[in-house]
Length: 154
Image (cartoon, rainbow, N blue to C red):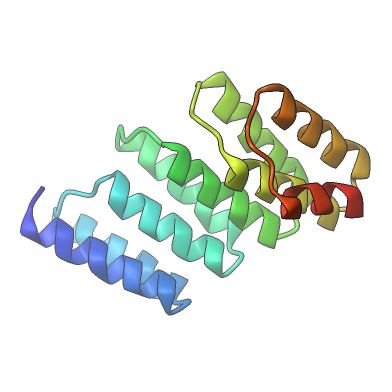
């Protein structure tokens, strides 16, 4: 990986921590203009930045850009996108992303399921939240107290 890529990744990650999703996207754009190679780390940081601020639309757009750049999403990518949907109140999109993970055999964890269940809770979809919790337990993903509470609260 080039030094420039590493530097941009660090700057985009800093934008995430500072809640500056717009600046993270600007940096991603500058990378493209300067023909600096982006990586899964670059996109994960940018998607996480959008997720932190509840910008689910931008997170999903970045996922499309990744696919165009032939960069395969991983569990970190999809967890961040599910988290963005959760914060944006988009439970259907969150559930759809969990389905994508299952179809692509991307490993899920309590973060994945917790965010999707929480999105269902926010949307008042208790049946779907309980379905997700049940499936999570069937595939032997460890549940947390918070995940179970979110499902019950839905």
